[in-house]
Image 1 (cartoon, rainbow, N blue to C red):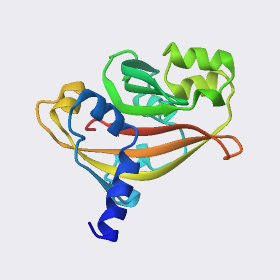
Image 2 (image 1 turned 180 degrees about the vertical axis):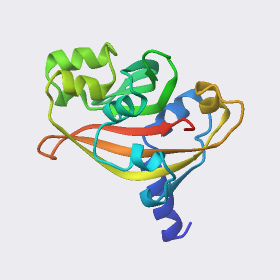
Image 3 (image 1 turned 45 degrees about the vertical axis):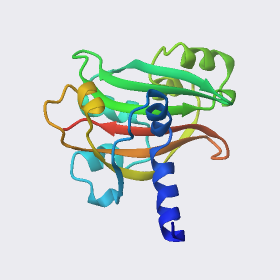
Length: 188
């Protein structure tokens, strides 16, 4: 493998992490994910993804509803807590995001850490509820070929192209990572 091919493969792995972890554990292939420039995303995806806010509040505003959490899978790994989730519009229970998140629990106070592991609410809501200052830093935007697994989670009959982002949450100083997230939206 050439140096360029190795660099591309490493960049794609970073963009897919921690989703790649859940696919590996479930022994299912990773969906085809390609990096895309944020300015090239069609609306409403560009407005929903290209920003430095958490997705919980962004999706809540877009859908005019509170956002609830459905945990699909979770596990601990080293210094991190991993969750594969669906975010749902509370009233309709319609999925508004599929995500995989790696949370660095040691960066949270005890009560917030307990709420995170109890899956009391989406992480964005808990950051707000516990007054935890944070910075959102998307590192890439994604074009995702919808596979049967994600299509099933979104109750899709067809397999359209989906869009998402790879995001890292930092503490208010920007020095410590709070979480790494792959966020994929259903068709608009």
